[in-house]
Picture 1: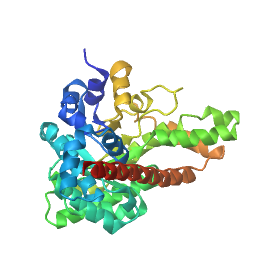
Picture 2: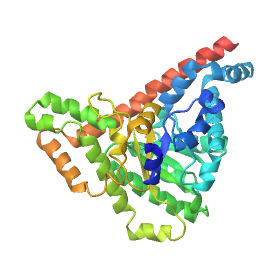
Picture 3: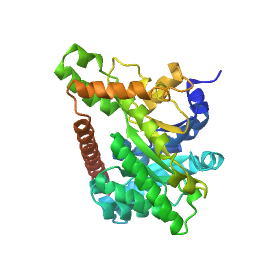
Picture 4: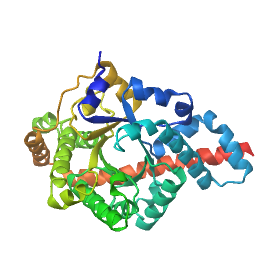
Length: 368
């Protein structure tokens, strides 16, 4: 029998695991997910690395070596995380080759403290790309205003980019524009643009968490009836933006010379509200050329009992627009919500980065 995850992949959704650790890499567990769970890529972030390093045992040998060589905490983090990503890239090299570069991708994020520093982001993105030294790595850059210019500059260097922390449709349009400008520059710079890929990570569950809290506070029957609907509506309309922005003449000219669309990626797809189906943000977001990056718990839920439709996005755009209009009509500001979520997203990653720094600093000290 075909598993729901295999069906999801057959329906055009690339399944990327939102997790990485050295123990997962070296136990063979990551490789096994390719065949058993149809996993075709991996995403990481500071929270994931902080969690992996806190468990620590698999990193003890490298930490001891780095401590002996006198590495400081920042440089040690760079060495440890890029090694994990390089090894994961090697595991997915076959998937990368078979999919012509669309999948088999492993993402590593620039330091979150650089989210509002364009030049710093570009510099570190290039350093991470050079250090991992694998064609199938993607450098994650947050979709802050300063991040937009960094996306263009990094893509212009021929580097594949995963744009993260997108919450609003307007910002998503700006992200696509930044990517297209980068592809134009990469082509002008003589890079092989057929090798450059990008995904735009549109965050899902956090939108429901924030909007539902506001709807509950308003408390009217109209407001309550809209709970747990806004995130799917927003994500579906993001897919409509994807279809629109890559149907223009400017893009067609680039596509004719080998350019790849920046695919939409659904992130933050673990359900936060226990009253909702644990597969909601996967099975209700199915369409071709889509990526869904799932925490393991969500991936296993889909594998176990997910009911996967052929397409649960296209054909639902008008309904999605009506939902967002209704949310606005009862008094929830879409712009306020998405701005808040972007700021909080950066702040949360900065906190996780601080935890990562503390963990590695302690480990280096103990290894001396």
